[in-house]
Length: 207
Image 1 (cartoon, rainbow, N blue to C red):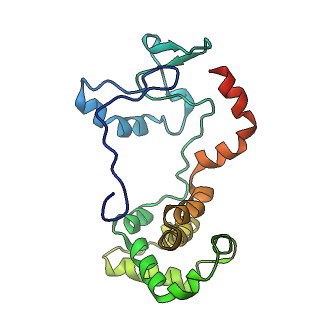
Image 2 (cartoon, rainbow, N blue to C red):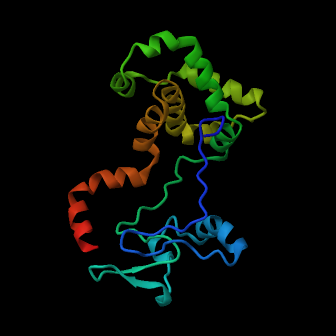
Image 3 (cartoon, rainbow, N blue to C red):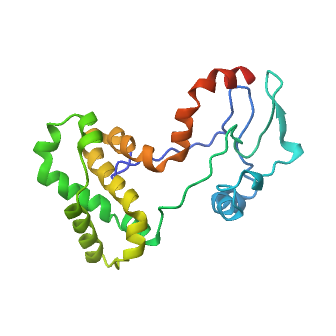
């Protein structure tokens, strides 16, 4: 566990699925391995399912005879494109310079007693990030030399409000307080997964 509550998990092993398939990309070309995420992003693999190609040499059969592919991750049964509609450079700068986190800590310290008296369910359904709070965030951004951009601010506003609420929630309920706010608005994979629980048993049988 690191000082900012994030964690680092380091492995020198490989990852395998329960059926014995290695999903780890080969390490031989280190430059390609470490640049894989950016390359996939630029190639469009986060946005379009048909941009993802698998070589026949990576074909693998599960214990129940299903054809899958190894050596480079898992192609999901349901492809969910990455939604960047609320992401802007302004939002990225506020995150990168930890302005949202800084404002969240300050707000929590000023209101800790009241915040600790409400339940997490009440926080999720009743607590709203006010206009004054957003103005305070913009002010901190300016203090950190982040130039205000009205158009990008408007585009990112729902995400900014959620992120700020999540940061405050994390100070009360740790990770659960953070992700319970962020997942429903910014984690499209999580949202889709909730819709597919009825098919989980069928998918398990297919493997």
